[in-house]
Length: 94
Image (tube, rainbow, N blue to C red):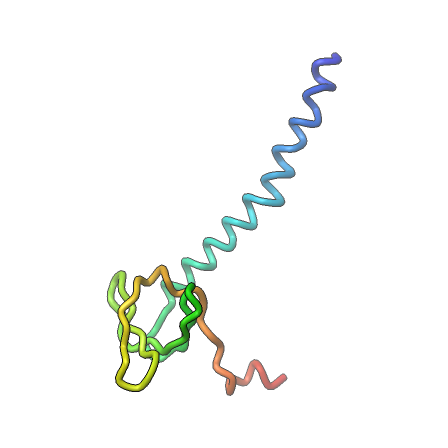
């Protein structure tokens, strides 16, 4: 019986770790992948390095990003960290 009582805290740590660490990490990863899949030409994005630009062209694994007039860089799709919302969108006017 003492052995079971000694293992009880260890057995409680596993579900708590899952709920507080693993589950939110999986949700963030899923959101990140959905963001990258939903990219479209003309969207303003930010790369993981902090560079902002507009998607000029998309390939399977590569994004061509316009960072200035007549300046287009080629980056991996995984480098796109987030899609920047349009400041003139009706969602922001509330």
